[in-house]
Length: 198
Image (cartoon, rainbow, N blue to C red):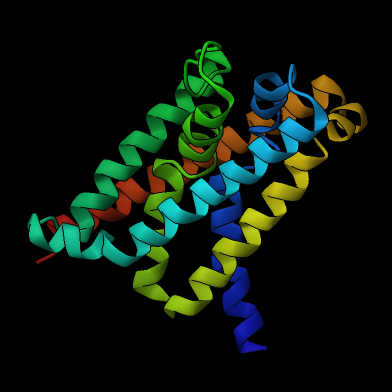
């Protein structure tokens, strides 16, 4: 039961940070002109890119912070500000990033799908915070499970849009962005409290 509880405590923050339903409209727009086979390959490549980036960051993230003499509280504040800007940007404009339709399919799988959409500042910051509080293998399992869930959602993109309809997808995206903004404020507040603590 304790393991399941810890999996839940690591899975939920990562799920909110990755937000597969929220970025579903971007996946549909980026892969809409592809054949089903090409779309499936692009989604698989984006998941592999996201997994690689996340695991590399888990492995060397803390080391990089120590080398640069950056405290966790500094990273909390900086990561929180970035997340807040992204959340506000999406709430105001409906866009996380500007897409370039001229990019090749392979490049689209890595940027912007793999990063920053699937694994961006929100996920990297969350991974770093979770590895500081939970066993490494629990965080990795939760991360992989979230990527598998995202892959399942993306592979059924057309069906999901038909079920939820565009208005439903948009509403879920707005709620997820609001939650992300709240998480960002919490990170900034916690970082500032840590900095000011004696």
